[in-house]
Image (cartoon, rainbow, N blue to C red; front, side):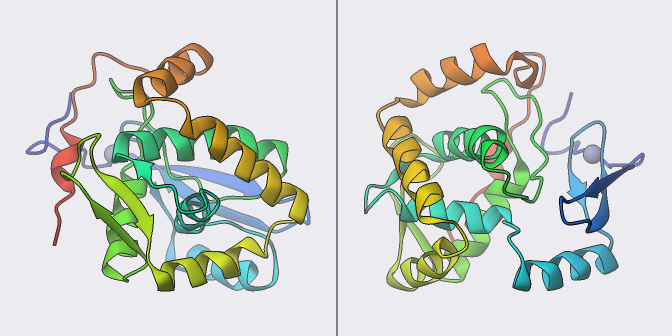
Length: 210
Ligand SMILES: [Zn+2]
């Protein structure tokens, strides 16, 4: 069990080897306890170079694109955003064969959760790409793209084909109709391994409005 005071020390990171369809191989380390993913600097650099010429989506690319295909509709709350990105990566990215950064989802009492997504949101906010209003870390919080965020997301959208973009737009429309509870029910029933009532992790305390 982890709390904020007693965070995982990630002492036994395990190496994960990945090979993309076109032959690019890379690896990262993942903690078997908290699922945090860490790239050795040389591997991170290799992926970054690769992503300039090839399709590879980082977590922040997906967040920007997800907000972009909502046509101005905000995402309602960080818990919903976490579930949305989970479904995008587990279903949309797989079905469309889009290589993507693994955010390191862990089973959590509110379903799958990745600290990486919270950190990306914070970074995108500091960069002025994403903004939110409403009480932070509650369902009343609303996430939007700013003008510069919309420009960045538009550039990312060109990485996908028109068909892929259209089906991502449809997925966003479908999930937009789910309440956070409805979406959690969906995730619980399709991905029971990502639900763990024994895990108490005060993760929302990590996000603060600067
Ligand atoms: Zn760990």
